[in-house]
Amino acid sequence: MITEVIIALCVIWAGISFLLFRIDRRITSLERKVNEK
Amino acid sequence: MKALRLVQYIIVAVMMPAVFYMALVWVPPAMGLGDASRILYFHVPIAWSSVLAFLASGYYSIRFLMKENSSYELYAWNAAYTGLVYSVLTVITGSIWAHISWNIWWNWDPRETSAVILLLIYIAYISLYSSLKERPGRGKISAVYLVIAAVVMPFFVFIIPRIYRSLHPDMIFGSENKFDLEPSMRITLLTSIAVFTLLYFIIISLMNRASILEKTIGENIHDN
Image (cartoon, rainbow over all chains, first blue to last red; front, top):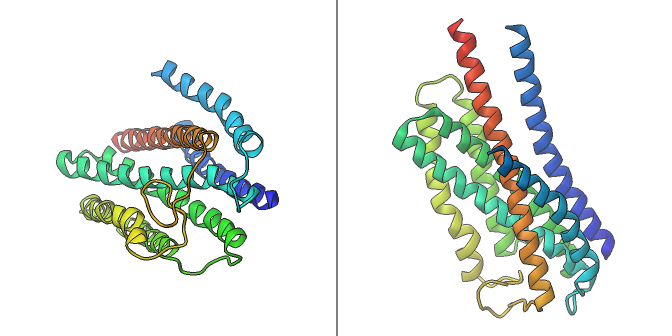
């Protein structure tokens, strides 16, 4: 049963990592725009 | 402001491992549910964060409609987007718990059904906002939609699951399925809710800062 708890935790952290990845992509795109100017 | 951010990061860095320890080791398993009950300490804070996100999207939309400041439009989008991701996580973790306690992944319980309808409402918002790209009135149309969605959301989260008979445990209001929490469980749950709420605020403030930078840099590029 603890396995399911660990799976649930992995799912939650995958989702939070996805959000952080999206922020990282936006910042990378901003850096590119600033460097192009 | 920088000091406040640093304090937020320190609290999350210190308290998140503490929440893991409390939820996985310190707190005793709930009677009848065994170790599976430990999902509660992560499922409820994530669900709570999604409710906060949807309320924030409604609040920013009202601010946008009142002030017509495009920053609020971006904040509302960020809040709705994070709320959608958190809702998906709530549904998945809830489904894992359902599999353990009811031996079925999905049984269209009123709580599950209302969660899916809520998901569809916010998926429709993302589609609406994306489809109106570069069109005048995009901000106002999507803001009105989000205000209506934020008004409807509490009915789906708090009222409908309590009107119909549900197997979902109810910890807040009295019901037949009331899930009594021992003091240690209550402390763990409240600590987890506080830490995950803080983590949500960190994520949303990062997204909002990125949006403001995008707006500023975009305007500067057009000016030159």
